[in-house]
Image (tube, rainbow, N blue to C red; front, side, top):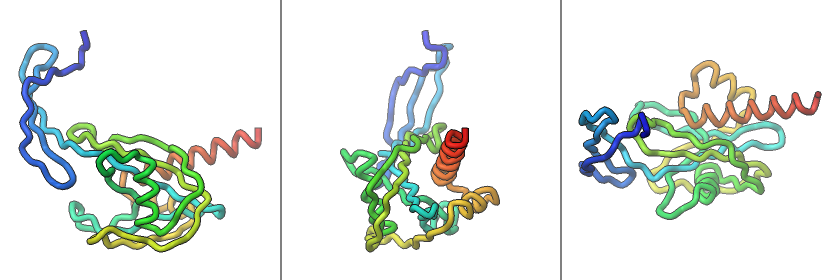
Length: 186
């Protein structure tokens, strides 16, 4: 008996758009009571924290309508049908920054809003960077900023980077670098 499990009785799709669909589910709680859940079904995505040998990171500035502001984020995008997260990461890095990378390393898998959304974002660290030309999708307007990792972490501390995937990527990298430095000095 799983104390926290909810059994789905009925699922109705109430909206299906280009990026996600919305379901309303009738569920039975463990104690037998009925309840309803509204769930956004999202195909998932990939994010990339690109860092060069001088410890500069590449972040993009992009207008985000839900917040009516320009946000500073790691390059990222939605998975295409049957696309693996690493393939998406490679594609998005080129599209949004023009960069290619020799090495990709897994950083984290995150659930941005698990209370109502099924989206999963896989975040990679990209190194061995080579410049090229960005190829944004039609209707995608953004700019790429190259900044010292320390400056990005300061912006994070000041609350100037509210995007969750970017915060997680920067903090995970910072923790790894501190751990690596500590291991090298021990």
